[in-house]
Length: 295
Image: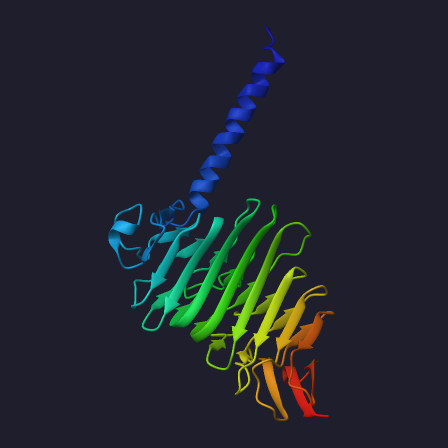
């Protein structure tokens, strides 16, 4: 009897195994399985309105099937309620800015990412009286949030400035590794409303993160994460500026959470009126609390 060459047996065995694996995958897939299909649309003007169809690469105002890209010195404004979108990438060469002003309302099924995996890139989100919500998709992901300064491979900067209006969702600031993304969240005065929608909307500040609280005469807005967890990494910085605060003693809860963990952030209080001292620390029951006292 003639013997077949060994490599023929090997080839036949591999082919059979591949067929079996492919059949198993097909049987295991749900009947409504679909391959991921990403529909990106990018803003094309140096400055303009979100609501203008001609400002986008697809020549249509973004809709729920779209992931939006804003980059390379483009300035985009939202001044009315617009259709929900899947997600957003904000940032590029130069200063890319999204402003949501009074009357503007934007909702995302997943996340906003401010920053890019490219060196020397930057993105800025300004909430100036409008409404912004993230993570509205029907899922259990904790990653569908506002990511400020996220970049795991290159130096990139992201900033979110909340002057007034409402933000709802989870927040993650900065990156964990040196020479990668740096993020800053600035809370300006007492007008903004910032809160978690549910327990999945956690608040994280990585080592390369900065949180700024700029007080006005009335104090400063509270980040309401009572229903969610808060984690501030060692190396993160919290800066509280009292330059515009009225001369009076008071306590202000800056981050409200019963599940807050401070791993060693640097906290500084600056520019408070003469004759007053200010100190901020994490409290197990209330979160981050600022105490202003007359000397």
